[in-house]
Image (cartoon, rainbow, N blue to C red):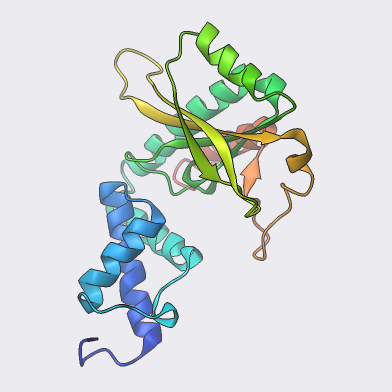
Length: 214
């Protein structure tokens, strides 16, 4: 049962969004698991109706607020490092039309965040061959198609840019070339869901101009 002090669905959504944002920023949970765990923290074990749950956009805004308040001395540098690693891999994978997506793109990535790339190519097997030739040991899984059309094969591996740096998880979702049509359209809020190498370079240039902006 919802606590008696909370009677407004909007207030419950706000509390769940704040709790989920902290779990994502501090523990590296994904949005779905963070939302479920946060809901239990706020309202207990009672099943929560959809109207009481925040959407991902609301949680993202709370992550930004949390990072500004509690991680402003470390998060910008972490984000920049992840964007640099992402751009390096996008250069390597240039023949396969790589795009960056997720938290590293939208600026909410932290020390627990992985890099998510989407590749659009005619023969996904060539990507696997490239990684094997580069001595990259990867695992194969599936990721939900961004258009809701089933699952796409995803290659995941850990990468260390230099010996003194921490390992970073990189996930490469393999799409057909035709999937790129319409994929780069902005969402309802005018934000791009993915960016090519040129777009990532622009983000890094913006970081140079305003080091604490993300």
